Length: 266
Image (cartoon, rainbow, N blue to C red; front, side, top):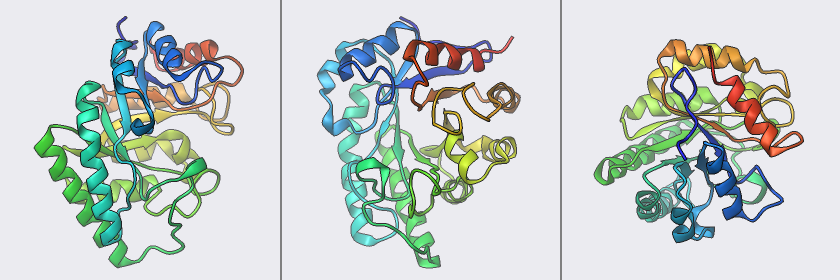
């Protein structure tokens, strides 16, 4: 099965962590693949990689570390160590982008070490850590992406979370092996002004993830004008992956159909 490509040239993908939750994980992967979408996963360390490969699905993103942090020495070394462990898995899955966050996240998406203030020294250390990550990606032939998150609803006390923060760090490193994972859902909650944010981020986009607000369900269930987002991406010349990282409002088949409709332009 070929992944679904809209008329604007996007590769459409969907998270097997958030759809078809009544099924075992491998069956979720198969259902998404059978409907013509690429697949995205989170923590690879909990997965049977051989079984994932055997599904025949295309994988477009996965979490690119297991533990670690950006802004302190011990956390940075741990992040690099577990990022390096992630690379052979990425190679086996066809080299999806390897997703990072401003700090290690634990259960329910909360930071393992909450951050109540980000200092100038933290910014410098985060930039240094991400430079090491980009160098690792260059050596191993993979691309890491840094994802923006929202602080207000899902990820309080996460450093370097806003899209503007992520863009500043990725621009500073300025490597094709470190790009942005621009999450539209998170950006709408934390920042708004989505199309201008996308325009500013355009040269640094590694992937775009989507879900609607409120509720984090598929496009068309909330306040975001996703056809306008799709058109803005097309106008930027973006032809990469757009991934649905959201819940199904009612039914996963319907969620995928709505997602496809929002990102397939005449």
